[in-house]
Length: 277
Ligand SMILES: [Zn+2]
Ligand SMILES: [Zn+2]
Ligand SMILES: [Zn+2]
Image (tube, rainbow, N blue to C red; front, side):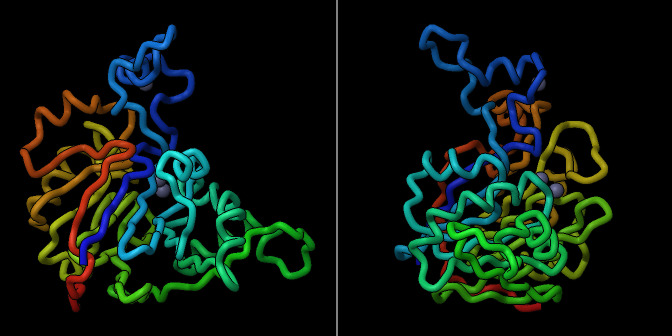
């Protein structure tokens, strides 16, 4: 079954341009004014999120602080589920923007998160989840816990989404495999038990923050090595900082590896049976 994956955002937690920065990449991402386009629109990166659409169903992974603008840009009118990777601000702060979309879901819009992420979302949005709060237009959402086991499955409209444990600094967070694609954001390393879940991929999406190593995110050289190890047909890097110019970096990468950019769309087969561990 054919599916479309849209990068709603491809930037790091601070976004690009980064506030207060006048480096060449940040300057190239904004219009100089007078109606002129930005020199490098692909250097404009909002916080990381993807939309996966198939057979009339729409599923989003993460709702960061840019979600409202991203949903408008992508023309999202209905959502069927939201999956969360972890509880950092750049991945969850847009949850409240699900309110108007959730009013279309009966009885509620399902959210999926691992235990630690679910606790964070419940704490931040206490007025949504605490039954003692009265807030009549709160999001109509139901937060479901994903088991922590590698390869744990959620089935959404006939498609299995598998949990792929991802090392993010000192945390273990949740990546997802769905059909022939995998989305592993905020990755600094992969646990050995995750590798069998990533065989036979068409599309692998993972972090490449910048050129220099970072304690909680993979950098360009390490991400290229991970792509060689996992051997997908094609790979796309996301969660990109202002350290990487889009065109200049792509010119150095092998043809099957590209930097993602906001709005990039990929088609892939979501019907492929997920890997078994
Ligand atoms: Zn992040
Ligand atoms: Zn900058
Ligand atoms: Zn993070």
